Image (cartoon, rainbow, N blue to C red):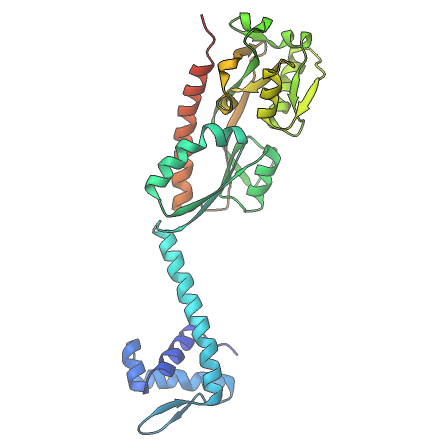
Length: 309
């Protein structure tokens, strides 16, 4: 049995009409064409759909049962098509993205404001997660794109760099290291160090920087969230190293922020997309808004982090 959607549409129109000629007029087809379609359906299913007289057109009991099913199928299909058309026109829909928490705090608000002006009816799902989770969400098709550091070797992913995110020392304003305009990684072993967990992108870069500097620092404290690390610094429990984009996540008035040098480490940030997936117009607009917001956020954060003369 292979009844087409068009045949169901013809049958539904006939089931609502008082005659085949009336149904044919509503569909814009000839009566013989409509009658032929009904005959083909009856031949496939093996029973009559209508009892026809000179004055009336009545559904058979089996015809009524099929009409109820056909009504639902045609309505659902037409509703789905309308929904796709509405989304394509940018009137409704949903965009999903995965971002690092620092991106969510610094870059995303500006991008979402621009997006909301253009697409006020589009819903946004933001997954502010760590690097590995962001990549997994993208690879599984849950999000349209991810803003994070460059992932490992995934042939299905495309990477577009947005910029570099340098690292800064964060310490109390009265700390000895705050007296200088810059700090060096080799300064850190002399003080209790507050590190992010090894599962975070921040920790991977700080470990790499210390290895390049030829130092070994055993963290006194390990935390998962950036705000937790900053809270411990504010309490005088040690120092930490954070990339520039994270600095907007906390109030710097009680803290000192100094560029970390020798080596100067940069966390490369960018957009990950699936190569074989064509993003919607809304997703493309949001991606462009993220690009612009990233450039603006970098300038703002670096200015705020500039040490005093």
